[in-house]
Amino acid sequence: MMNQLEEDLTHTLLDAADHAPAPDGGFLDGVCRRRRARRRRRVAGVAGCAAVLTVVGGVAITNLSPGSTEQQLPFATSDWSGTVPDFAAADPPDEVWPEAVHRLPATLPSGSGYQVFAVLGGDRYLVRTGKPSASAPSVFNAKTGEVVFLGTEQMRNRPDSSSTDWTTAVGDYAVWFGTAGVDNGRRWHAEIWTARLDGTGGPKKIATVPDHGHTPPLIGVLGDSLYWDEAGLLGRKSTAIYRLPVTGGTPRRVPDSDGYRLFGLSPWADTANHFIAQDAPTSSTGVLWNVETGERRPWVAHNHARTVTCGPRICTGTTRGGKYFVQRLDGTGFRELPYPKDGFNATPAIAGRFSVGTFETSRGYVWYIWDLVDDKVASTAATTNGSPGAENGTFDGFEGSTFQWRADDGSVRVLDLGTIG
Amino acid sequence: MKDADKAFEDFVRARSAALVRYGYVLTGNPHDAADLAQEALARLGSAWSRVRRKDDPEGYARTTMARLHISRWRRRRRERLSADLPELGYTDPGLDRAEGDGGLWRALATLPRRQRAVLVLRYYEQYTDEEIAALLRISRGTVRSQAARALDKLRASGVPAHTSATVGKGR
Image (cartoon, rainbow over all chains, first blue to last red; front, side):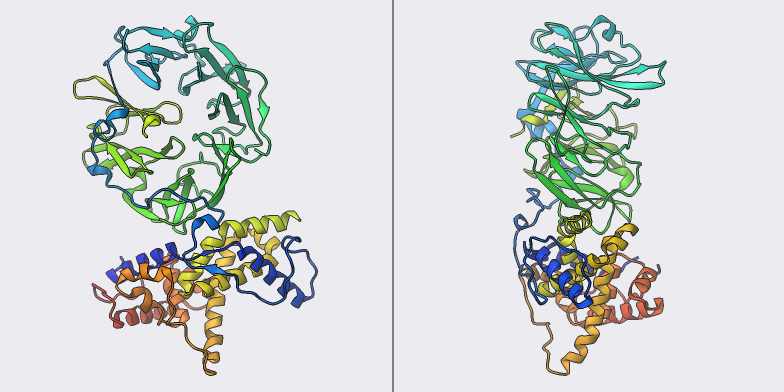
């Protein structure tokens, strides 16, 4: 147990570190000069730091710029304020973002339940139906009640191999993938399917990713193209990211993508693996790569981190003490949350603008939706069965773009995160 | 450029900010922080191939920083005999924010370097006393006594300590 002085001391040191002046662009040059000076003293001739640097004698103190900003570092400027709202005191989503909430009937006209994957506009929604789910999505027109199934009849009856766990709309197309067993289920391929949203033309398989195991790869969207890596969720090292137009064709290897993995937040990839065993130590550094623009955002874990994963705005993880925390990509802004690591989770959504997950209360699990840019948060009522699940909400859609829950009258509410301004 | 050199430079780019932050809490002075971090990194660069094989270059750099900091303290104590001014009067933009602690940050600057290093390793790095002892190459008892003296000095300096004295953390 720490006493008050020790706790104050810990916070003082952490705060001081957070506000320490940042090294400027000459820092590396200074290190290189010192290496050369050491080498000269040792009369050793191993090549050192970049040969393009001018050799300057002596041991220079690099220029520090007190108050310098993060723009001078290779770290991206964070638009997170550094504050963590009180999730438990938040209002429900339809009060926080009423303009982004859609009110829909409790069931389809057939009486079937449904899960909204994407809001298409014009009262149309890309949905999953059936129990178990059909292996292709449907388009539901909430105004007319019309439901257009986009797959084949065989898919409607859900053959053993496919699912609609990943579905989205790209331009005029719905895209989904499934897994297909071959060799009597000894190997599994991932299949990517598309269909026009108006239901014309029928479904089309545009790619097969061979030998991907039972878990399909993560798929991202870049404009009108899809992309995926070779590592997927299997823990394999990524050797490349591939790109394919939604209209089909030949997958193309994305240049310079070696070593990067998708982690479910388009258009970003990371050098670190986000999908490893729970509690296994993670990388302490990594580089996020925007596959679309080429921007790279390095990140570093705070000293207290045991596990960490980063999106383009914040990193989250668990401390050595078993608490959940958030931090900026440069390690500053470290904040422990008042939840044990097993009682909290966070998933980034919409290019990292949102963090969505559940936390545990004495009344059960509660969903929260946290807008990091506008410092807003919404949360749902607690579950009564003590476990997170569909009872008080589901977080779905492409890379977590929709949050769906039931109102008190049983009707469906859908929060379309992508339309929050 | 050789792969090893590129890897080292990538490491410096990725970790320099964190190491300077660590140097800042160790020294309390941004220029000394950068000086310390650069010197530790230069030494790391000289040992890069060996350290990298052990897969903990950051640990090497941090350990070097802590040891360098204390050895400098020893050296500067001698230097002060020739009128080298202490650095207690230094202020920087980060200090104002840290002063929200009721003067604790400023009180830390009055501690001898080894005492301060022990506190930083214990409360910032969250090392156990055994780890601190190994890192600084001193006994665990010395770690505890240094920490106790440092905490006593902080209390005596008038910072708003709210509870009774504690020696060590029972780790």
